[in-house]
Length: 347
Image (tube, rainbow, N blue to C red; front, side):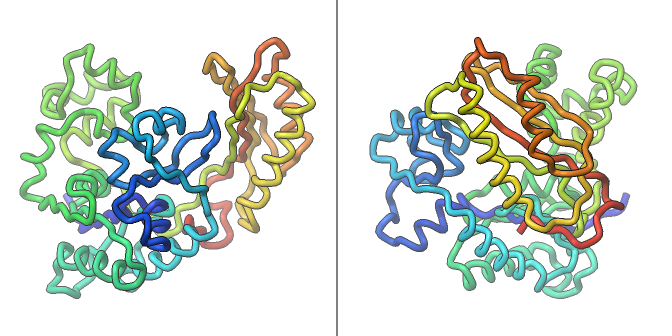
């Protein structure tokens, strides 16, 4: 099996770190970035806030209960994107094989890079140091023979840490790894695995590929290979976006269609701005709502254009007047790689 040298870089509490860097008076204070309305959630928070149990994706009100002194700052995506672009430029100083995952993380394939004594570990250290020199922000790095292991490794010594999984240590590392670390294992799948007594990768290793497929369907292949530390996915420098979406959580539940219709129009304006001039060919449009009982309803239809009237018709399909909603989202899905006519980037 080809042993690649993959580095996964993950910025430490990226949005919050930028805000603290730009306002030193926030140092050593609990800081979060996100909405400050009753129904909002946090995008991220710094490590001071995390000591109180606060974490990204947490409802703002719950975060305030856990940390009464929490400082919540508004999201400033334009600033974060600019910093992200600067960090991306650092990656390209080391290799052209860069696959961005989000504004704050990326995979780098340095298998053919002969610098730094041909050491991926030394390269990762140099990348992290260069980011600090350029942006005064810390990053954590994971080095491993594949993407799956590199991403896990980058989270093991946060913040400002480095973790290396050499090829000859993969077997020992993977056996005690909890099954929830496998890509695609969410809450429902985790319950199924635990019910079956499968809690560590070593437990999955006792089952054959056929047994896992019979019990868990196509996902059984992922369970089989990743539980053995195998991931053949390559770093894709030009990986296009499969979809783009925007959503809003209402401060108060909405049940008036006219008001929700206006909210959809506002969301569509945000969607157009987010999409910009990306040349991806549209495959479909979709609408999602979350009811006040947290049940999610959605509708999708094939489409070749970004059509506001189509979004409105999809909203009518899922909206029921007697059921107030707390969240509204709309989005576009795009065709596959061969439909992209220019290099895409998430930075």
